[in-house]
Length: 204
Image (cartoon, rainbow, N blue to C red; front, side, top):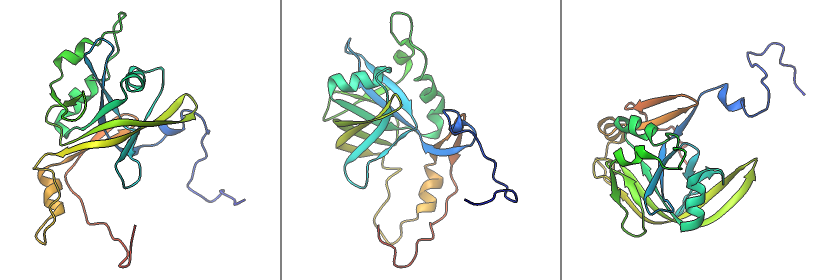
């Protein structure tokens, strides 16, 4: 084992607060799911990502939360990628439920219909996924990985990467900025970006 006496690294406790001692960068997505009364819930998630490079998407959930229970019952969910100017409404979708388990704020959130499953998206989001439940994986403490198979996907025309020699990724990100969640309590509007310096012979 090494000696950290001359290091700038600070040892911290390995506990549930470990991830709150630093900032980490995540996508922020809105998971849509159907409630028992037929209405639709929207819940922001930052522990969410593609499962590999194929047609699967997953997020971390717990049976304690309505989103998990809704997906378990209905076997489907939607994923909306909000824009930076939707950060407030995305945050409001995390509002606490009332004593009767209702979530009145959802009536104020504009939604659009999914096409292949019974579901809703956050209106004006730039990337939408429709998913059928594939499996639950875990447990990680009380948390589980909820994995869906993507059965439909739509990208707003102002956000899609074009396959052409003249495509300018930097300009696309500048014109259609991205929303990043900086866990635990900040966000960023990403407009400036640079090409990643992949090795010449890099293959995934």
